[in-house]
Length: 112
Length: 115
View 1 (cartoon, rainbow over the protein chains, first blue to last red):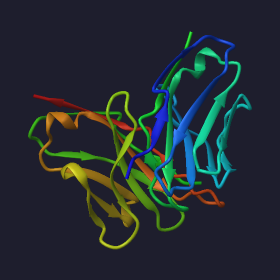
View 2: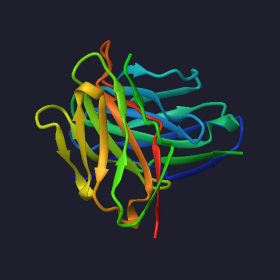
View 3: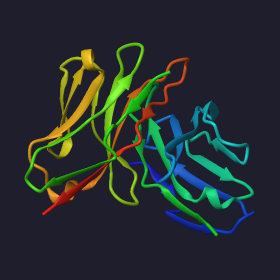
View 4: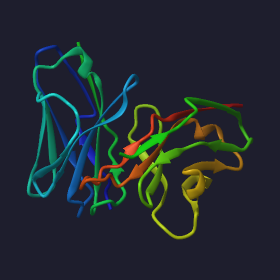
């Protein structure tokens, strides 16, 4: 079974731009979570989608948003990029509530 | 709210030596516990997990972990470390309370392996 895939793997943007990241979960998994990882803050939870609905949300500003499609694929959008948004963005999927999260390789976003 | 503490930010061991990475958690009920490993620039890979049953859990790559309820710990061990084990290790506890099933991750322990 294929793992979690994320595209693109690397992205360079400038301040003020917006960006969209994509995540395809493991086949059959309905829950998709997004995390931001930085050296200073560690792994921080952004939000979780389940059956096209945002079910949980972390403590991030409204510039960070996401959505999930009927095939469970998910996108994350960051608008008005700031330098501090530079990070590794990780997507994880799980098959049911409370079950193991399986992570993708991440998207490395650099904001100049 | 649950929390996870990994007391050691960095651990340095020699290749072939034994390893123990510490993880302490705070959780109101019987937790689900996980250990993940992350190589530089990569995503997190599941090493092992504990949901219930035998408190000694075997994982991939020769790792094991022991759940000790009395100590609220879930330490990761390996009898003989290989240079390829150098990576960041994360302990996590879940599911969250209040309807959220998102696990809580520790800050990670960086493992350095000397030849």
